[in-house]
Length: 306
Ligand code: ASN
View 1 (tube, helix red, strand yellow):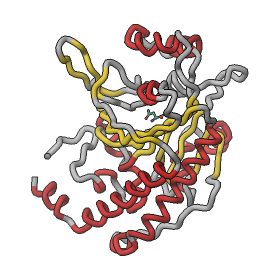
View 2 (cartoon, rainbow, N blue to C red):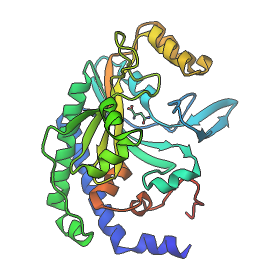
View 3 (tube, protein in one colour):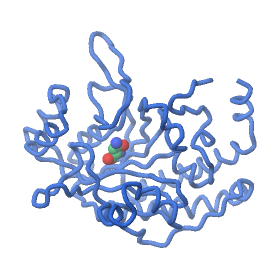
């Protein structure tokens, strides 16, 4: 209890919250300037991101209906772009992912966090990378300008990266550095960078002519801070969606409504991704563990105080 109170009262946290506030303003300004519409997030829905890695269930039953807490708004992002007048959308989306306790060691996992979740219609991964490159530099510049005292107090020197950010292919990095390539390259890097092509969820587009190649990506922070954003171009064709759900042994009945929409050919062609807010603040402020940048830490496996 005492530790939690002194954490909330610390001057370090004052500085971190100022940096976070500036970074959030920069994100909103950038979105507004680029005509990206902000919509409100949802927390409970019949189905959410399947998140194909081990985690505990977070659902409630409400009037007989099972509702899941948002793991990511990916499916809702796609559905929101069914509106013909909206081509670009973002959500400041709280996610609940009840991760396994060993992930607390990573320094970058929270079981409750917020991502700025972006989706763009009729755009490609190239467009998205360019859009996010611009966002990152905009945030860096704004934070450096507005929070020079706070950064100094935190002993953090930030250099705005040169654009375009470097782009790597995961296969090349795997050959060079082995399975742990993401951490190794993040340790070595001085600027944020992109890695293309990961086998992930059903909704990230797989190349039809080159099976096993996925038109998706991660953006990583340098200095060993690891994953910042993940996203990709999306599957929109019903047959591909069903094929990939089956490949991942997904219970199709859970995605009944989504599949109804896709079977009518309505899923729009989109690209997008989600940037973790707390991870970004951890990097901007140079903190060792993500718990240090949150007012009320939710670290996997740890008991919550407040
Ligand atoms: N936000 C991610 C995306 O847009 C999905 C996720 O967080 N799992 O692809």
